[in-house]
Image (cartoon, rainbow, N blue to C red; front, side, top):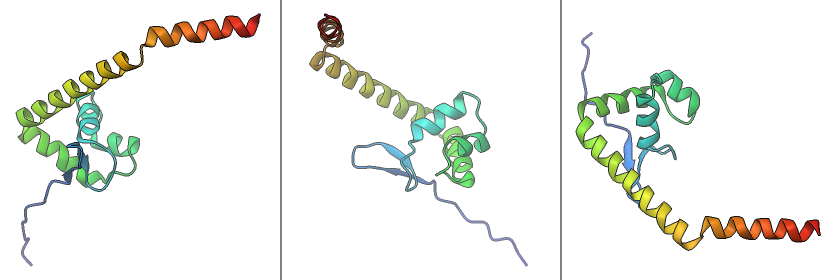
Length: 111
């Protein structure tokens, strides 16, 4: 019997919003890589996100290690996008104004 060696596809898919997700799960590449960078093993990542398969996590970590610059660029773009959205939301929904209204409501209810 001979061992047949084949290329395994990386279980990553880009959704309609441009977010890279693991296979058919809702778990993002961002989450897996950040968790790995924070020192978690593949087994710990699967424990935290049980919808993932251990082999897929190992494949993703391998992909990251072999394409670190591209993945880091993608992660930086996602972080920039998140900051932009956060600023837009803070502009639309002023947190200080909300805090002031909640305090005023508390004072009114106490009276």
